[in-house]
Image (cartoon, rainbow, N blue to C red; front, side, top):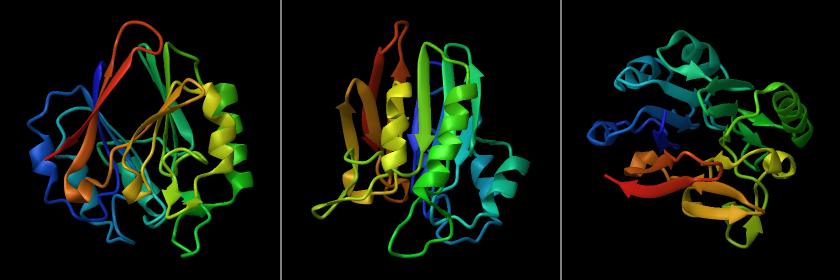
Length: 213
């Protein structure tokens, strides 16, 4: 697995997905908010459109029952889990830290910390260690107006990874680097936004292009 398509924040608007199929990639990562508070029925067929391995986590706007749907689908549900694929280890944490909106899949910072502690302690350390989380780390692609709304616990565990793939904050699309860790928010796929990630041969050799279809 060298080239990966990263999507997030579909929010039930799947009309742009076919346009991503023309790109060349070995796997797909979906970083949450596949639906907009449901419905869950289309999720399986939507994910089956990809002819390469697909790894997905829920977002804060997905009902918690989406975990069962993802686990029964052709995709790999990475929520609260990890998987090693050659030189890449993918770890996943769905949902988000608390928001003012009481969305369906929110976690306390303590819950996020507990889950990431377990993942980091047990996952295979690899050439590339990638965290797929819906919420961004605190003070990294997390500005809403003048406020940082990212997760303090994700920020705490961020140094254990080479790359953070997140979403959640639609207006914070971009790529940044903090303390040697690359963070990417591909922007909402509902509007045709995504990112292509290329993993090279050496540690930290990660190239990312933001794309719009």
